Length: 286
Image 1 (cartoon, rainbow, N blue to C red):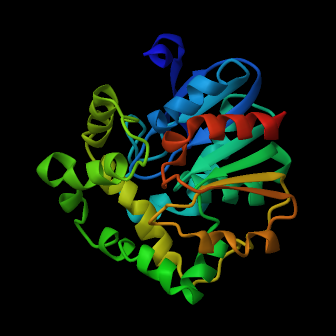
Image 2 (image 1 turned 180 degrees about the vertical axis):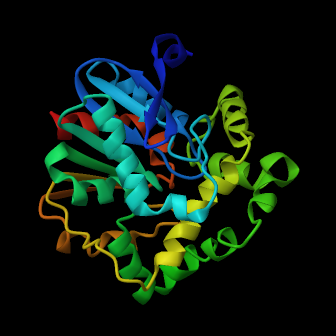
Image 3 (image 1 turned 90 degrees about the vertical axis):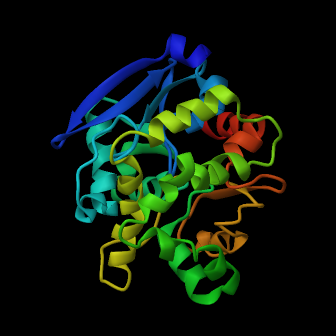
């Protein structure tokens, strides 16, 4: 595949762990953050569409694929995840850059924008929830409560065993089965995912993102959710995990906000509608 012929891979040492990071393209820097149960390769279609115009930095997040996987839920708090991105950007001397997040990459990107607005040019979310707005939606929306009920299973001890049963059957359903676009995921893609999921400790580490966030619910923290960075939100409206309710109060927290609703796309909007995502990112970044 073209990406593998052109990309550079680095293991970047940050705060005692190594983050496997793919770098490809030239131009203004844009970092892409994946979610669960994904890895850097989840951005493949977007990478192909943007690499001729931007320098793309695409890490495996802490706990995923080839990045280090520290044990303990306490190592996966939002504060730590946000600081990973700050240290990664500093280590690569990015200066001021743009940042995009999908799924769990979303809260990390939102958190980074709140804590380090001076480091960002622009912010992009693809079905990536703003955690403060998400908490509000969970408090008042029965549809979002139902859509998020799977989290109660994810946070249970040893829940990774169920996700790994039958050669990752559940994860295959989540990643391959929810995509709306036919033939969007090749056999080669599926093999790459299984390789990533098979890395020792990877599934448990990914679930620790949920566990750490659940443990913080109701506790006082420093996250206000206020974003002072120009922001583009692209949202697949057929997402069964993140309903449109998570968009309703965003304007209360984000001063400069553009929302693009993609009617026939699932949670995996970058796979269902890559051309639309690419064109909107290019237009937004200029």
